[in-house]
Image (cartoon, rainbow, N blue to C red):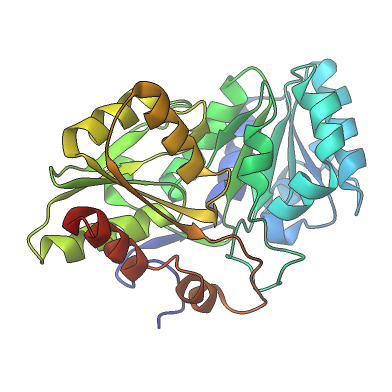
Amino acid sequence: MSATVWATNTPTALKAYGTALVDLARERPEVVCIGADLTGPTETDLFRDSLPERFFNIGMAEANAVGVAAGMARAGEIPFVNTFSVFISRRAYDQIAMQVAYPRTNVKLVGFMPGLTTPGGVTHQAIEDVALMRALPNMTVVEPADANQISAAVRALADHRGPVYMRIKRGEVPVMASAAEQAFRIGRADVVREGGDAVIFACGLMVTLALAAADELAGQGHDVTVVNVSTLKPLDTGLIAEFARRTGRVVTAENHSIIGGLGSAVAEALMEAGASCRYARVGIRDTFAEGASAPYLFEKYGLSTQAIVDACRHVLDGA
């Protein structure tokens, strides 16, 4: 198996988020960077070294970091709070609810190493963060698919008035040619490949795997649409219902529990729209994982290209 979870021929970029945040901050003096003792692992060493007067390391105190960010936002600044997804979602949830979501403070929460992209085991694997953040009123939830979308999303977050949660992989991330052709916009899903036999709704790293699955299915005579759902809330329900009706066969793919994430959101949207279709979800089944490499975990827990192919065959064959 390759050392990455995406296709081996996919080009990659390093520190897309860290670079984009520094570039944004140089243009907008109100942007500040808040950390929780994970400066290097969140790519914010670039910000610290470039704009140290606007960099604040609160230490291993995520709840306090959120409170500090809420205060800064009320003073007119745009704080980006950076730590691992599991820490910002689990450890600071009450503070996010009461100091960010409820009063709609202009805080941007950035969670790194979501789902099974970390080898750190259960303590570091955020497999329910989307479910938690989706449940909060006033919270926007985004998960860019590649380096280009991460860079664009940083600016979109700053332009959006109100709280946002973004989950991304750190370090090396894929670069998709199709994503580069489409501007990132909060609330919009993007069709990155069109086909009439079925549709795969995917988010984050799973978009690259969904495209690889579509290539494999094409070799078997099946033409499949791939939709990059980079905003999980608010969901692009119109586009989702349109392609579900058009194909009648839907697969969702996410690096998250199948409970409460993209799969649940799409199912809710389709039921409310009255769109009847065959449906399958690819994601982490109702279980905790273990500590291991990302490629091993993606394979073991059913987040692989083959898992997406199998799910598509299930809805295509009617089995």
